[in-house]
Image 1 (cartoon, rainbow, N blue to C red):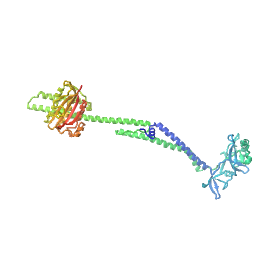
Image 2 (cartoon, helix red, strand yellow):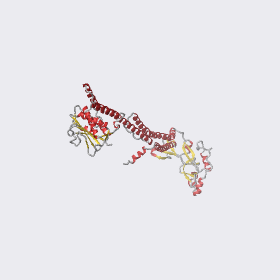
Image 3 (cartoon, helix red, strand yellow):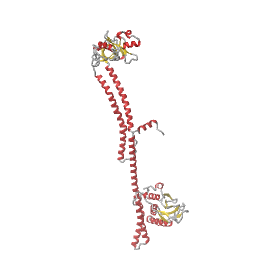
Image 4 (cartoon, helix red, strand yellow):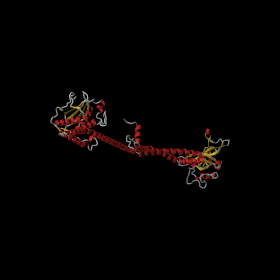
Length: 546
């Protein structure tokens, strides 16, 4: 199932290298900062221009002083009226930076009714430049430009700011009209129109001026100029700090904090958690490495626990399985001591029984020595004839029941005969050759029998039966008692380690579990059931094929 486009984009973004992510942040930052800096500078520049283009002037008949804007021009100078006249610039066709200036009407004098009202409802006015304002020092006058040739406005006439004073205006205008390109005549020759005849000789000129307020920098002007200068610096600096702080917090600090917390939990041996993938390809690889390390440590910890548990299980099984041969050995020794006290001599059978049990203990100790878990026990098979095996196991069963049965009868009528399973006399199924050898680990089989017989003797009421058969290379041993039988829970969990319905200091609930492990090592299994006539039935199978 594919992810939605938004989720795919999020996954793509979270897995980018930090260099790519930083580049995207940098591009967005530069574009945003540049746009904001230009917009801010433009706003402050407009405010500064509006402020610096205003002067204090008496408006109306009530002598109110207001700040009004000064119309910048262009203006031409009328020498007869000694006035600056508002004018319009008319460029010469196909002649480069050449133009003529034509007065647009009026003398340029300002009166209460002579203002241009841009927004009458807000009483904002535009003031024309006049020679009176120039003499009063409220405005400054500058050359408009254009129509230059080899002559340039005379430097000795201009002041330090390239401005033209009221006293020098007439002289500057006369010299400039004479020395500049005669654009008025050029316009007439090009178009055939006589502008001076049409508008008036003093109302057309090749020289124009522009006006600007002439006042010292006040606090507002300084603040606006400072704002214009600082706007780019503050915009780039402030937005840069916010941008890269966000980049560091989201793409570096948070992933590192997550990985640091995971490392602390690993150091504290708290491994039962998972490390989520973090942002950034580089840090994501680090989180994957930490996750693999955590998983490996957790598996190693669990393996150590399993090894310790197996060792505990092995030790308990070792102690458990020693009880039966020691009990038999103890009973044989007691019988020998009793005969000696009566003055009877020890017979060969008693000595052979003692020797057999001692040899069995030695084999068991050798097989268990060096093991870390029961499943590692080696299987040492030997060849036995079926008859020899039947006699050997018969003697072993009789000895165990005699030692642990406390008067229980051996070889009671078996319920297996009614179920089609061999009775006390062992049987060989059709298809198995009677003389064919059986390959088995006798010590292991005897340990399994010890556990099964020990449980049967502990629960039997009057007797225990033992059955044995061979079918298709599988040796089957059946132990039945006439006790209460298995409970439903015991039938399910009887082979679990340390399970017992009647645990005691001498009974750890390991017999059937150890037996099931040993049978599995020998290619067989343990099956629990209840006999139809009552009592518990345990069936152990072993693979005895070569």
